[in-house]
Length: 196
Image (tube, rainbow, N blue to C red):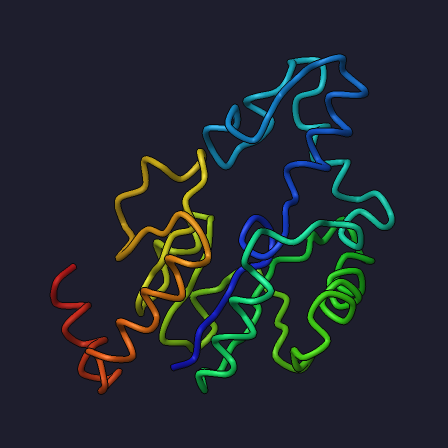
């Protein structure tokens, strides 16, 4: 199968550093669990508001993220199992260095990963794949094939997914199940669409 994997909050912790910067500057104590929707600016102090997104433009911001537990071994396992793994991640238009920083992160943390299999885009539904693992409900909603949601506080109300996982171990188990029972991915995809 071709498995598309999001980067931010699926492979790497972005909220930890993001909220650290915000908390430091605005004397607050927000945590990942406090962000209940994709619109992060709704969960910070009004005096910060949409300025929260300016932190994403800081040079080096994407370079220093820490990997999510199990993510690196999980990607390696998927590749070893013979799947075509593609990292599909949005790079903010306002942060021109973010693309290079994400590539640098991959080179450092996942030297086994082929960089030609990294795609920067905002419309993930346009990328051909059999499975999409993402934390963004808007990405999953429009994806035409199997949609797997990495559980986060901001996506817990999302219903338009096919499967929810809480960690990388569960995702690997799910992919192995798909590979075992859905031996014909075309057949699986057509059945999956009919069930929606």
